[in-house]
Each structure stands twice: as structure tokens, then as C-alpha cells.
Length: 249
Image (tube, rainbow, N blue to C red):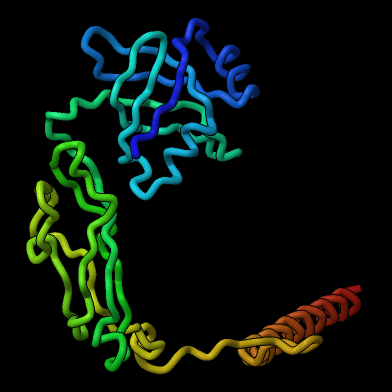
């Protein structure tokens, strides 16, 4: 069943006008690819959400009506506010039903791999989408791949997948879609012994610091003794000079 939404031609432009539309639950949009020129539209936000809830999501074909016109269209791009996650703008593209278009389709693995079930591996989703060319009526909502026969370190590439009727893969044939990998063990991530951490107990110094200070203390003590000896010698010299002066008198 084809979804049909009603839109209005947009007369007001600018940030303030768009902000007012969003407060009313509406979304500014542009329809590209028309026979004459692009058309600025106003959509109901609930209609965009309804399209996105279908199995084909952005690849959903729908009819958009405005004034006395009705056109086949798809969502080209949606702009979302990164802070509020609010839909702030929609780009639509007019579709000719008899012309091939290029779309991105999600990959969905099917079955439980031997490498996961009996060999301790896990499914690594290397590539989750592929690009395809097809007529609008042949756009698949997903492409399923059977992974049940995969062992450890085996993969499924684009070249080994049979596309649905009327669909041609555009993605590189050598692109890996799914790989059965072995989980990294802690020992492999950190080969050899782990360095021991020095943790100081409350009120106590780490052993490393203690050793450093213990090594520094004798050296400091030796320097202090040397200074003491030098001062003692200077005092003795002073006394001898005083005695010499007394004799001269």
C-alpha cells in the first residue's frame, strides 16, 4: 500500500519562520528533481515519522501532494538537531518510476554460525549496508544473508551474495559483510606479565618512594657532615689568628 501525504507550498523563509513551523508540529522541506524547479514545501512532522516507521524507512516510496499536484517521492536527507534530536528539515527527491535509482539497503544475517555455536567465536558485522541499483518498485527493505555454515575466521563478501530479482550490487564485490572472529583474550591483549601497580595504603608511602628516600638520606647526611667539618676548620683558623695578634701586642 502506497503512503500518501499532503503538503503545502512554503511561502515564508528564514530561521524565524522555520522555528514557528516546528513549534506547530510541522517541518520545512524541499522537493528536488522536479521537471521545472525545486519546490519548497511544509510537511506535517507526523507524516515523516509515519514514513520512517515502515520497513524500508528512508527508502520508502510515497506520494506527496501539494496544490493540485501529486508526485512520487522518497526521503533524500533528514536534518536532525544534535542536541534536542528534533527533526528540523527534510529533503525529498522526486522519483520517476521507470528509471533506475541508487539506494542503500541494510544487510541482515540469518541463522547461527557454526563458528559461534561450537567454536567459541562471535559474529562481527563488518559492513551493515550495501549500495544497489534498481527500479523504485524493486527496492528491497533488506538483504538477508545465511551465515549458518560459517566457521571461525570465515566471512561473507558481497561477491558471494545473490541479489534479489531486479537488483544489482554497486558496492565493491570484495567488501566483507560478516566475519566470524575469535574474542581477544586478556593475555593476548597484554602479552607477558602485567606490570605491578604501586598502591599506597592510607597514611603510608609507596615502597618505591620509601626506597628512593632511603637512598637519598645517606647522601644528604654525608653532605651535612662535610659542611660541619669545613665550618670547624674555619673556626680553628680564626682562633689561631686571634692568638697571633695577642702575642704581637
